[in-house]
Image 1 (cartoon, rainbow, N blue to C red):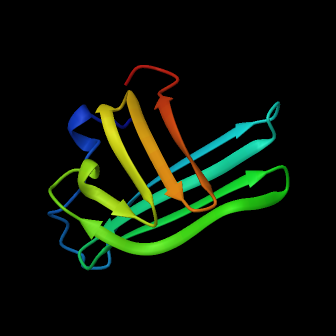
Image 2: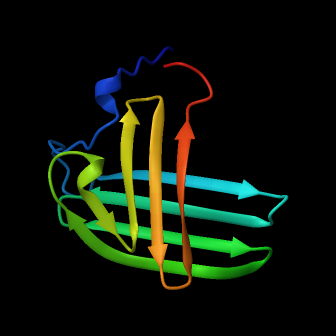
Image 3: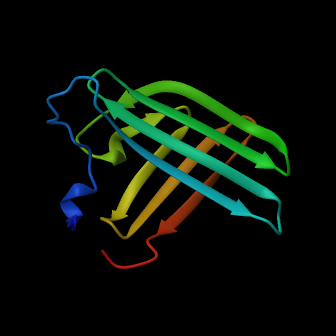
Length: 116
């Protein structure tokens, strides 16, 4: 079995017939030298958007957030929740994520390990 994904798939799937369907994107990072680690997650469904983020310094959670949010437009660029937002810089190749909270945050760029 083979699967082919084209760059047009790196988007919100707004036309899904199942009202329980949710698009979800998760970013995770770790910097062992700085002992900083984190995760940011955005979701979008027919009813709402949601966000979750946690940032650790060593084993201590120093910034956390989880909340419903806004969904404006038809792309991930219009989703913001829990202080988390993202951009598709180049479909299936590069993305950026931003997490802002009173306890701290991060702004990171991610690139695919291989071409699509």
